[in-house]
Length: 137
Length: 245
Image (cartoon, rainbow over all chains, first blue to last red; front, side, top):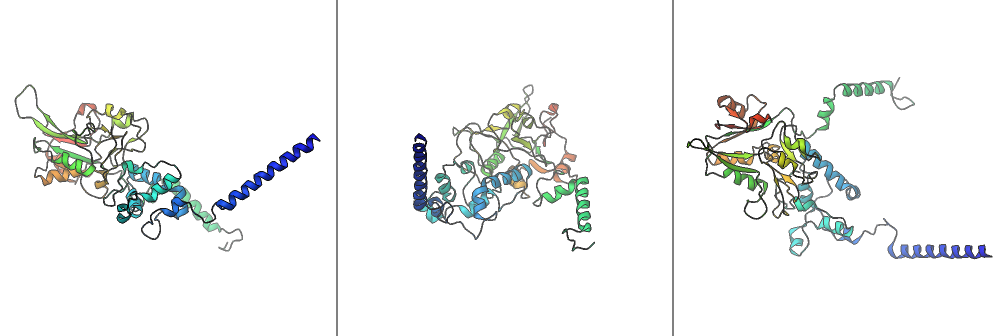
């Protein structure tokens, strides 16, 4: 008798979890079903047709590793590549002047996501985010 | 055996691949050439500077100003600490009343740099072409290198950087020093101080490859005697001074 009671409790608990999951999916949608987070949808459109590095999904996942390996190549070994440099990123991804005039941050392309994911981004504490310049690091 | 081998690989291809691998293993230089499509620092080059102290004017600060403009470091009097990638030092023998020297002092780009020896994170390093640099992504700001450097060539960034130079990223909490304008050298140009000194009409600075017997700096070194600062330390400085002794 006691055992049957316990089973009933477990069953109703499982049903509750299932119902909650179904509700969450109905409201939020499945992850990766095409609805992008607001942070990605709202960022400024980059210049050019495609990133010189890789496709957007790969860049979203691996840009920090690519930047680090490019830094090692250019700073430590002197193998420079202007297109793939930090300045290269800025060239395409800096917020256009007219949007900056409306109050958008100068690297909104980066900051929109970094704020959404709460990942601190220190790149432009040291690196220049000016479009002009000859930095190849 | 034909290329239509059922296993999908012919003996010829297999042997060819094995031979290529063996060749590469025997000649590691082969990989070096392949792995550096954009060139990179040339290990056959040794960049150096010759300072002709007989041509350097005491009142002239052209090299210091050029460096500051090029690399974006602040003047010493604005509360950001004593940043000095290059500074003018006036020397006079205390035992004689003779005319002294005024010389620019910057990182001497040693062949055996003490700053690299003491760096606990390998942030201080010597590039293949002899330029001594700080990898600021690795620098933890311990300042051992500043203590180790006999030339007082390095400086620490104490305050957040407000004006960021596109030529040289600078950040609070890291050590920095003369890079010999590595970004210009990689573009095939001379350092900013050398260019400005020539524009000012003094041409007290000569830049070039110390390994190349036909370079301007080697020709100048053949004509003038020149020595390193503190030659007793045996650091093999890349910066030489003519007319000090």
